[in-house]
Image 1 (tube, helix red, strand yellow):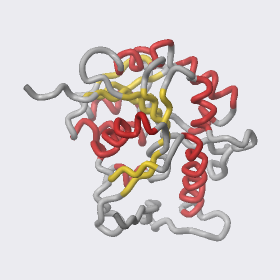
Image 2 (cartoon, one colour):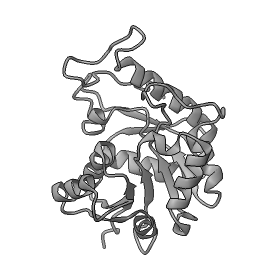
Image 3 (cartoon, rainbow, N blue to C red):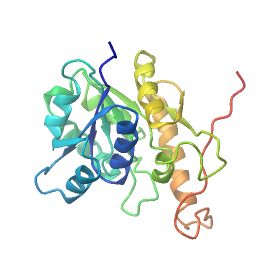
Length: 239
């Protein structure tokens, strides 16, 4: 008998969430999108129209769905970084996930950027993933997908850069690295664990540089004329 499909509850149905969801669906996963206003969200309705195999609902409903029955999977956070840019915002967002977040694997794909979208809000000296983990003490928070552009999420085969399969760094507890790696591989990237959640600070700093390089500010502009980012931070390791 074939194993049950893996589940991913994706909180946020914007470009990042819908792109990762499409990749997971193509890999045979089941996907449910969670939205604050599922009945009136145009983004959610557009995504569900394009992905009829997916389902949608409220945030707490999606989180609860992710952990029930066979094939239980992960909760993937793809909301704007402003949702986790301050301690208070992290606490409020953690509450919005509901009590079912306890015991769940929560993968944070966000970057806590300022209103201009180019600099990290790091006045607290810790990554948003670490603060979120403190707000979700009974969940297992990891950091992934925040160092790569959405255009490469759609083409993890590297077709937009060198044609080499793209690598993806992620951070979190060693206990759950295999589960996170499974989801990363389902999207199409080659996963590389960098250590515990403390190293999500480094991943968020890399993301700030990544975004800066394509923003045209500060003298550097690596973006293509059409606005895409034909570059990627690739891991090269001799094994």
